[in-house]
Image 1: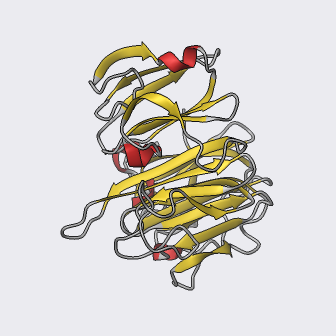
Image 2: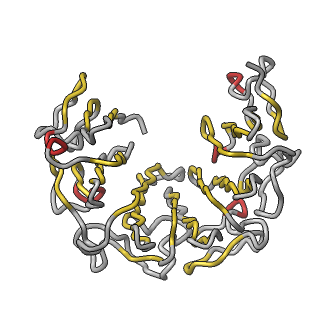
Length: 328
């Protein structure tokens, strides 16, 4: 969204920040943009184990202490706080006995005339609870999975919303077409919301409740990521056996099934006869202009997807519809 800040976590749990600071999310006591790294004061006495920063207009930062407590600064609705804050405050609306595992967010503009900026935030707790807050309205989709109608911001009846139990990881897309994916503790995947690009399966039906997705393909999943913009979404899942499932929008070959057709349901594996140990993406992967990189157990990097700017390692800038080795 063009409102960046940069963060550093050292091996003693101390935090440094610099960059965009309109709402005070840098946590240094003011709301002035900062050009050089400065120490975040609260991390002197409260060691931090993880950092999450929203990258949009409504900027906020979240620090997870080694004690599992969440500390937030920045714009009020994004950060869960009752007002904008330029120093990090503890915020645990789900209860002080429920420690935090991770935070996620998505903030994108709608693409139709008169559309605004849509956002969705979430917290996965160590006990497996998934809580979310943010926009609900727009064009299509729920994304909360409990049939709740209004947006969930400060001042709403429900803020934030408890959405699901038994969750290991989760991600959401918001652009007026809201949808969410959850990796469950048993290795399966659930989804809710807008079903564009068959992100929720080939039925094409959007949902306001959670449903298990992918049948035998999405089992024993260890890593799940969702990428999207407006009506375009692409998801990637890595299984414990090293197989990869990619589904959703595949117009530049990023699904890696040998073609550039779209939409794609989660009913095939990446065309790769190697064991994958991790993956990452580049560019606007969920909107077709990005590439998927898979690290295999033999140390090879395989790539498929959009070829412009040689992001797939091809000097001819040709898109790749199936994984090919990156030559170093």
